[in-house]
Image 1 (cartoon, rainbow, N blue to C red):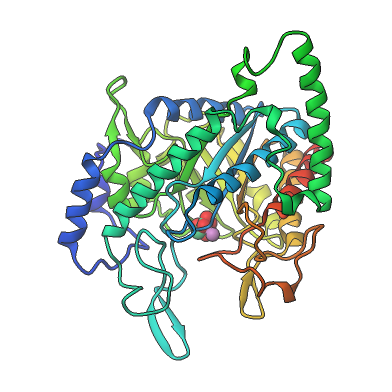
Image 2: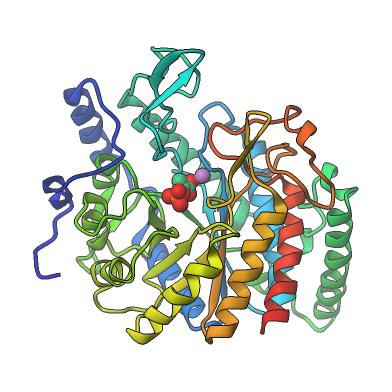
Length: 448
Ligand code: PEP
Ligand code: CO
């Protein structure tokens, strides 16, 4: 793109899915405050993720991205952060062991507070109110007052993100992520399930290997990679005033980075080539994601690559595909060929969640069978086309929720009423997440 970019150049273009802020002055006051607050992540960390994704692009590493659909102000505690970290670390161990490559761990966490909606209004018993747009905008409870967008929530989202990141940094560098603690990550309610037992057997094998290495002089005291993990944050860059306010110019390189998270993605509903979201993100140095649904045209796909990654840097752009198990086979082969024909470097990641949502007994849910069916085709299609299946993207939680159906510790339709707690889309529980990690290792090895 030849037109100059500035952190606020998106303001000239149409931004879809924005809240109807009742008081624009109050929004500006909040953004001025945010501009002065410290960055949440640092340019050096962002560049480190970029270089890991470059390896993913070459097939030398695998991307695991996951977390809440929408983080909540109310479900905010040390335990819930720890348990989300645990389940991602467990999945990463399963995948690393099964696939024989490093797994790059990226949470949908510490900033995932804003949601695009398919309808601006929600109607319950004949009453229509503005839809819930994520806790950085309004409150999920169904009342006129709760659904009024309030810009001070952006500030609260910033502070909750800072506090979440603080704990994540402590956990990942302070000994909790030590490979000798593999058993501790298995939570009680998972440990007795078939997946939990399978995980325990894997942990046993790794512990034996660690015991051997200790004898020959390699342990977590002298080898930091055994006791620390790199864990990155990500969210959908939806509320552009917020993202702009956290954008900083790096003193070392002069480049701009959006310091609200390491990786930012554009949602399926806001990826218009001439829209504000594409304009904003093209100018920041962070690695970017872009959701890709079944209706995308070849021109749009290449247009997105042109705008978001004009220098064709490997790892800069991750295409997060979310077609649905019944559509992926009709769409993905064409898109993969288009990317190959045009010589574009992208990471392909599969989001098997957002195309597989349906309603059962008034609950929005997803079936593990459908999620697995989309993943299976994702690996098979990339293998058939000689392309690299680079990663996976999940909505999950460390809690024992009953939001998605199926799994070897089965959640049935009648169980959905038990512990359905999400404020937005249905998430995998910890046991279902482990199930999928084991299945992915099988899929990726059998597709090769
Ligand atoms: C999401 O990831 O929560 C989401 C809204 O996805 P998509 O933009 O793919 O619908
Ligand atoms: Co979602």
